[in-house]
Image (cartoon, rainbow, N blue to C red):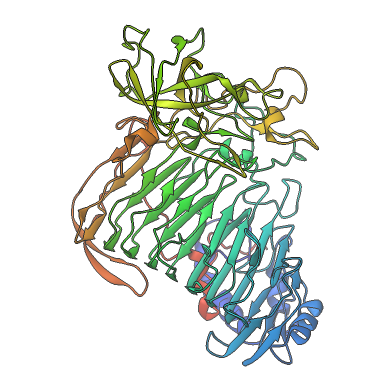
Length: 638
C-alpha cells in the first residue's frame, strides 16, 4: 500500500539507478496526462509501464452548469479516478447529490462556483452524500471535493436536525478489498479543500471512517436562531489488524463497529492515520465549539484560526451507546475567543504550540460518569463492569443524617467517626451510591443499579460531592438525597475511556443489541466484557508551549479538579509548560508565534515514546496545482 500523497504509478524495485534514469520521463508523462487526461493516446506509453490495478484511463468530465441536474449527470458519467469539473455560476439545490465513486469534483473557485442549499427539512437529507466502499487505484486521491462555496438559502430558517450534516462523508472498507485499505474499515487519501461553508443551517461536515485532510476551508457558522458546531469526526469502522488481547490476526472478513476498533488499536501519533483539519479558518458564535468528535475519532487540528467559540470539544463515554474520541493532536493554531477551551472527555490529546487572544483557560477534562448514571454506560460507581474497580466490599456503608439544601451537593452521617479511608488526591473516584434511589435500567446491568455521586472533599462527617442536578435525554443525573437514605461508598481506580486511557481489548457489539451487551472479541456468548483497558499502558495527555494574550501560559485546566477525580497529574496528563523557544507559523492566514517550540517531548505512559508531528503541509495537499508527488522507488522492469 502506498503512502499518502504518493502517485499510483507503481513499479518493480531494483535500485536507485533506474529511477534516476526514468524520473524525467515519468514527469513528462504526468504533465501531459494532467493537462489533458484523455481516455487514450497520451497515456498509452504510461499504460505500458503501470503495474497492478493503477487506473490508466482517467477522464475529465465537464458539467454543463453548477445546477444539481448537470453536476449529477456528470457524476453519473464518471468512473473511479475521473474528475468532474463544475463551472463558475450559482445554483440552488433542493435534492441530495449521492456519490459512491472515487472521483474528484472540482469547482471553479470559492467565489465563482456557489451552491445554495434549499433542502427540505422533513427528512434531514445531506447536500452531498458521499459513500466510499474501497480505496482508489487512481492517482492522487480516493476522493476530492474542491473549489466552491456552499451556503443556505434561508440563513434564519429551520436547521437540519442535530448530527445531520450538509456534507456526509463515509468510508467503509474491508481487508479483503482490492487494493487493500491502509487501515481496514477506513478509506484513506480523501481531501476536501478550498471551500467556503457560509452560514449553513446546521452541522456542515461529518467524516466517518476516512483518513485524509480538509484544508483551506473557510467556515462561518450562523449567528442567528440556530447555532451549531460545524464539524464532527468518527472512526466507526476502524478495525485493527490483530486481536489486541491475543495478538492473533483478525479474520479478513471482520469489521469492527461503533468505534470500538479504534479503541483497540495503537495510537500512531505523528502519522497520517488521522483526519486532518489544516490551514482552515473557522468562525463560530461565542457559545459554540468547533467540533464534537466521538466513536473512536482520531483527529488533528493544525495551522487553523478559530474565531469565537471555545476550541475543540469531544464526546466521551456518556449519553450515546458508543465510545468517545480516541485521540487528538491540536497544535500551531490561533484562537481568538474570550472563553475557555472546550472539554476533552475521553482518550488522549497532544496540545501544543497554540497561540490565543483571550482564551481564559486551556483544555479542560471531564469524566461525566463519575457523577451520572448514563443510560448506555452506567455510572462509574465501583460496580460497573466496564470500569477498573477496586472490587470487594464497599469501603463504607451507612445512613444519611443530613443533606444540603439542594439535596445533591453534600450528605452528612453523624453516626460515622470519620472517612479516613478516602483520599481524594490519589487519582481515584470514591463513588457514593444511594441505595434508595434506583437508576433506570437496573434490571440489565449492576452498574445501573443506583444513582450516585462522587466525593470531592471531606469536611468532618460531611461529604462534599461532585454532582449534577436534573435529568436529561441521555441518562440519569446525580442521586438526590434525603435523611434516612442508605449509602455505600466504593472505589473506582479508572473509568472506562476517561482522558489518558488508551488502547484496550476489542469490544464486539452483538447484532440487534446495544453496546452494553458487548463482549470481548471474538466471543458473543459467555462472560460479559470487563474493564477493556486492563493490562494496557496508559496514553496520557500532554500540553506544552501554549500562550494567551493577555492570560499568559495555558496548560491543562485543572481548576475544577472535582470534575476529574480519577485523573492525576504525572500519570494521566502532563503539563510540561514552556520548552525551548522557536518561532513558528500558527493559524490561517499564518502569523508568527514566537513562543512555539520544535523541541518535542517524549510521550506515552513513561514519556519515552518519541514524537514528531506529521509532515506539514499534508502530502495530500501537494497535488493542488495538478502535479502529483513523485513515486518512491519507481523502477522499470524489462
